[in-house]
Image 1: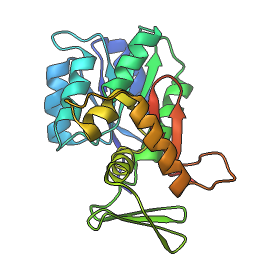
Image 2: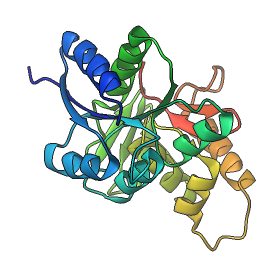
Image 3: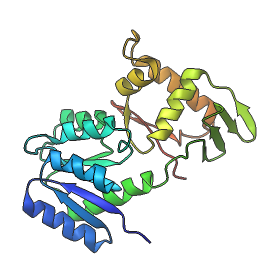
Length: 231
């Protein structure tokens, strides 16, 4: 079985060594970068399965690195856990808005870090194939724009389908309301994020079980939504 490769990006050598030692002890292969520019180069060359990204980096900070990763279709799918000494809610929300999959504040326990690494890798290990995706009793054919639940076709509007597709393609990652509004409705759309909430409610009515708590489309309070496909 191939070792999962993790890129550690931090300019503090002792922190890199500590994380590197413990990840390798848990069976992962590691690569280290001391700044954002080197990190981007390594990501494109090595294609790691996960990036541990410090925010305070020389030259190019972690927020900008994350932004560049999400802009590049060749590497945008790689999950990112941001690590920083900043613990304010604003900093966490900003990291998530830029596409981070998780956020850890220094100081942190190594056990928690390893647990979060495993959780993110588990969520992102199986990517939807280009044409079809199945979860629970629901199957989606992206090419045909067709959704089947319990053997019956589910009628979705174009926006509902695009919203569901965006959530699935980025499953396990928090999608903010503003991000979804921009991506699905466009930057020139004059509506508000309430539009996203309404479409999410309609999606849940169509693909979730009426008598149960939402299982697949999770609300991240004050931020947005995340698609979870784990049973």
